[in-house]
Image 1: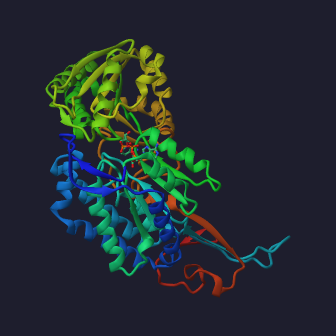
Image 2: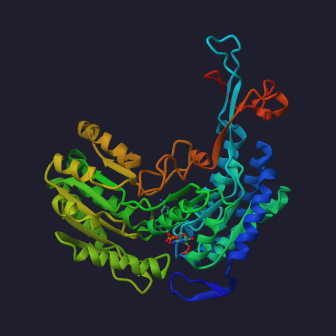
Image 3: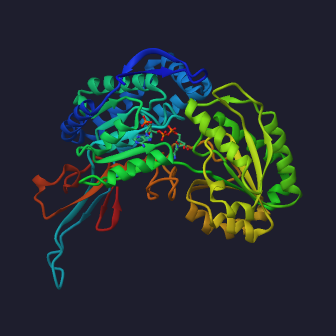
Length: 508
Ligand code: NAP
């Protein structure tokens, strides 16, 4: 195949002009350009790099409605959602500009020499973080803006000083092309080498595989399915020089309904839960795919309200025909699983549309069938009815790693919540109370990550300013002359505002 076309999510029909399918020659050219740009780009000042990130944000916003319409057509997502997502995308570029300016990410440390120390003198040792090198970025279909071409991985890698080569998502090539052109304009306007940003497109696994195996790529940021993420991890580990892959994959995001909260507002929780479950046709990595609760009247009220809300929920266009098919077969598998009862399904839709589905099972049945704990990407959820706290804790302990875990609780539930906290911390990247996991704030304290299989590396996050750390590595400078030290580590580096840890004490 030499060309492919954009597909209208609602109809499955191809539309618009054809895109040339990139192959090994284009990967080679993009990686060569990225490698050639690395030294110049990493030498930019913090102010220059921050201004570049802001220029990308402005260029994306300046595309205007063409971008929103392209994303609506290719993803089937509604206008308001995509306008919000554009705001989030430019917002996170601006957040990283601010982070770059402040300089904390450099983690400057100075341990001055102690020539008189006994029994041995201490040398002068200084540390800073430097960018790892060109980064390959893979976005997901469900966030064509915020987790794609100029999404969090691209923003954090560029903020770290790494050139980026994006493997465009085949489900939204037009959206990706518009954003890539905006980044390219910002590169030129800021006088940076063209290789700071590269964009490759094509609808096959091969393109990404060649990119990840290119020896000039130093790290990978990926958002998408577990199978895709794991395939890239294996390729990266099998290289002559293995590299890290930060793959943000799937999660079923357990929601724990604690007894007093259920007693007080079971029905209201049921209705609100379905609002979160069906948002965006359930195509969120933080979708609440699992509910855990102890049997009782409160839980029955929750189930009755949730059943009613799911039954009235309209079917929604899914991102791609493949995702729709996978969702419907996941729901069909739950329908026939042992010990699982279908409580409700949403209104039937057209081809390319998925309807919500709600299932109920027991702790015993859930523990007996590992498949019940796998992600069904869409608006489907399983409620596990536990007999008591011990059963609830056993189910929780048996879960895989998760992006989020949610507690619905009242003050009188706090003792139970405290007993569950040690397990929740081990299982999830983010624990939240009395809210819903969908909706991930982009800020400094956010962790959008978690233990495997939520991610391939639980030590980090793909959302929020901490994401920059994935693309940095530390270098120590021992007894170097002032002329050889990076400016920010010299004794006279005053007034640049970056905090430094001097002999273990934070100095602003
Ligand atoms: P996907 O099918 O895995 O695609 C993601 C990207 O990886 C695409 O560019 C795809 O392009 C590429 N890819 C997939 N398999 C590959 C392979 N074996 N080798 C090389 N490249 C490969 O994921 P998606 O359908 O876009 O996204 C839906 C999934 O993402 C859901 O499971 C959702 O939960 C998850 N997600 C996770 C997060 C998070 O932060 N944890 C956020 C959003 C979504 P090609 O198909 O052209 O190769």
